[in-house]
Image (cartoon, rainbow, N blue to C red):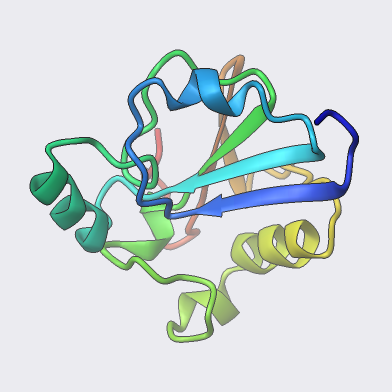
Amino acid sequence: MKEKIFDNIIMNAAAVRSKELGEVISQIGIQERIYVLFNHIDKVLRGAHLLTSGKMLGNVVIEPLAANVTYVDFSCVTAMQHTYFAGYHGFEYELPAFAHFFNTAIKGGEVDFSDPEMFLGKGDRPIHVVRDPAEPGCGK
């Protein structure tokens, strides 16, 4: 099915194996945008990795990257947390980048990653690091 029925698909801290997932995701065409959110130090997904012997998409993005996906790295702001948009943590309310991303993406908009105070790009790769102004070196 290639008819666009969704504005955005958000894969938040996905507990699915990363290996070869880029090829599968690249075939999804029912949306305008796909956002894959990950956190390298998510303690829940690290446990899932140990149990399944497979790296989880919400922890590790494995090449090749899907061309139709924007990858968003939340490692600098979420620490070891797994759930980070349900209102449990202070950073969900305090960080402008956090609010900007979720308010835009959940409402179906295209997230603007151009503000260097909120996001750090990874060159020509479709990866954006959510920045914490209190941690200026994070994500570089």
